[in-house]
Each structure stands twice: as C-alpha cells, then as structure tokens.
Amino acid sequence: MKSLVLHIGANKTGSSAIQEFLRLNAKALARADVRVAPADLTPEGKITGQHIWLIEEALTDPGKGALDIREKIDRIMATLDDSARLLISAENLSNGKGAEALFADAAARYDTRVILYIRRQDELLLSSWQQWESKIDGDFWAWLIDCVGQRGDWSTVLQAWERIVPCENITVRIFDRESLPESDVIADFAQALGLDDRLLEFARPEAAVNPSFGEAVVDFAKGNPLLFRDKHDNAFYDAVSQLTGERYRRKARESVVTHAQRLAILRRYADSNEWVRQAYFPKCEAPLFPAPEPEDYEVLAGDALERQKWELLASLVFGLARHVLR
Image (cartoon, rainbow, N blue to C red; front, side, top):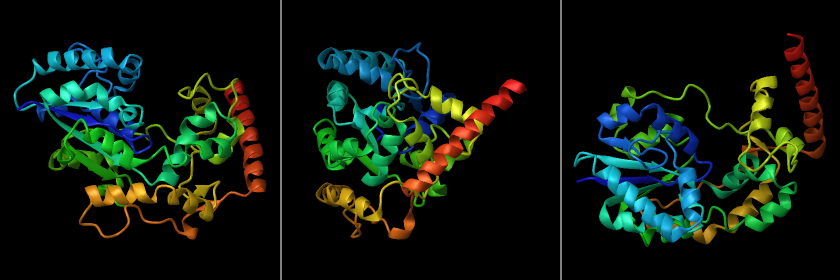
C-alpha cells in the first residue's frame, strides 16, 4: 500500500542534515521504495530534499494550499509502485502556524506517518536565536521573553498533528547527539524509516550542514540590516567562514545564559514535556529531557564576549587583507 511520510522537523534538530542526506541519496532511497518528493511536488521537479518554501507558499492561502498539495501528491502517487513511500521534509510543519491542516485531505487518502524530532527547549531557543532571529532583532532578552513557553511547546505541536494523523502513526525522536546512534541524526533517521540495516548503501554529507556560529559572531552582527536582508540571509556568515575558516563556529559548551536562567526557561515547559513523556514515552520513568547541570556550559561574561568580538573583527580584517593581497 502506498504511504506518505512527513518529516516535520522540528527546527534546529538536524533537519538540514537529514534533508541533505535525502538529496544526496534520492536514487538509492528510491531503490528502497522511499521516494523523496521533488521540492515543488511535481513529478518532473528538482529534488532538493526539503519542501520548506512549498509549505510557506501554501500557508499564504491555506484552503487553496491544501487542495494544491493534495492534487500534487495524488499525481506523484499515481506514478509509484504500491509498496512505495513518498517522503516530504519541512521543519516549518511543526512551527505552530497550522501547517498540519495542509495535509488533512492527503492524510485521509493515504496511510500517513509523521516523524518529529524534539529538543530540550533552552537549546532550541538559543539555536533559533543564533540561526534566524538575531538577524532581524537586536535585543536577545526581549525576543526570548516574547517566545519562551510558546516556541518548542511540543505537546501543542503533537496535539495539532493528532487531529490529522492517528497518534500511533506519529513517531517522536529526541534530538540529543549523545544518545543518537553513532551520535548522528542521519543514522537515527534511517532507523526511523526502518533502513538502518542499509545505511552503508547511502552517502553522507561531507561537511557540517547549516552550522551555527559562536556568540561573538552573533552578538557582533545581530539586528544589522546592512548585513542581513531577512532571517534566511546567510551571506554574512558565509563571508565569515571564507575569511576565518571554522574558527568562529559555535562551541558546544558556550552559553550566554546562566544555569539558573536555563532552569527558569525549562520550568515554563514542564507540563508540556510531561504530557509528551506520558503520551509518547510511557515506558520511560525519567523526565523527557535530562536537566542541564551547572558544569554543562561555560557562560560567557561580558568582558569575554567583548574580547572575542574584537578578536573576530581583527580576524575578518586580516582574512580580507590576505585574500586581496593574494
């Protein structure tokens, strides 16, 4: 029976790496009866591994968007073998803006499975700030206060999808590199698809996909309209990479929030996380996410951050001069 698999993210849970894996292995996955849908959901469309912009466009007129998506899925499904699974990947399907309704008709016509990766909310919020929001907002604390308790509310995301897809068809995976097989989200995703025994048949991305940058880079550039057109513009960060290499990539233990602040953030999600644990991990008696410990992070004090920003500026100037003189 033909089926539909929706990888719905979430943001900052390895989605870009998974999507690059899908792009690289579209032909190999097809031999395993997993068909990666073209980016525009047309049979002749280009396979990029992601469908984010298709969803964004559909959300501008949800009624028309849902009909368009269902018709496009029907056309692709008509070309597939009965055992095939059609795979769509878009992390904005879990952003709480009602994107799940776009697939209500399709889910009623096809056996549909949803795969959602969730992340501890303090890490999710800080990564979201670094990746997107700092480009258009210069005040971290104002942004954080505005979105804490809402962004990353996994129970709300799951309950919305349960109105479209039966809960037994929803797979929830916890994004924590230390507990992932091989510390690799791609290996975990292959396992979620039931393809872990064939993982050696597939290519892996050669470099880090969508890397994050350190606090000094983010604080140096935040909210500057001369550097960013919008939250998706990465030209400045690409230039930092070209001029300084990987020197200013984010370090895993680096933090601008204290341990007490992290715990305060997580208290806002305690009820939501407990609901998810009971609904999707009933055999696990431990909390959904391990609590952060004080020694897990190195908090950057103001002086250290300023020193790193001046170092960054000097590195950029030197890198540019070396490039020009070459």
